[in-house]
Image 1: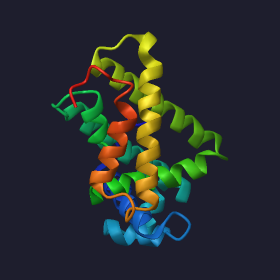
Image 2: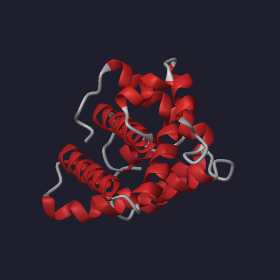
Image 3: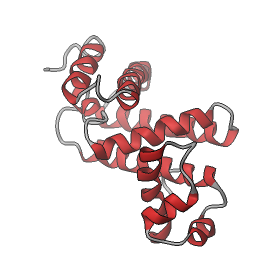
Image 4: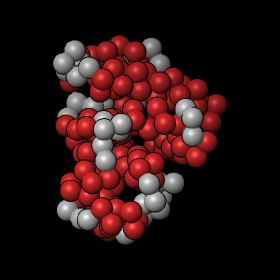
Length: 185
């Protein structure tokens, strides 16, 4: 999960799936849509991925790879600013959030996807704990911050007209400030 690098063509398919799911939604997207976006045949998609759920998992993992790269590369403050930088304030980030939303819907009834969801969150918590130099006993603060990020991000993904970038940042800053009172906002 997430650490595995896919072959280049499979990565391109996963990235194309991010776009296709974002544009059409998981229920309406077809493997032919993903293939068209990736510039490959449907046969190439099914060569790398056995079904639509496998494509969703690959798109989910690609979105998390992008998120982790962004968190690791971010050079500003760690607490609030790092979280603000993860919001779906751009088209690129919104794609990942659309896949995240679709994945969460499927994870509710799929043991495999639920396990991947839990692994992704555990890795995210650990990454944030380590990058912030926090103690294991402070993991609950990180969980609360991730929950706030999820809430704002999912609202903005579902209703972007009501949640422009400025409002997303303002709302998340308001929710996170009590968790990180020593942060200079």
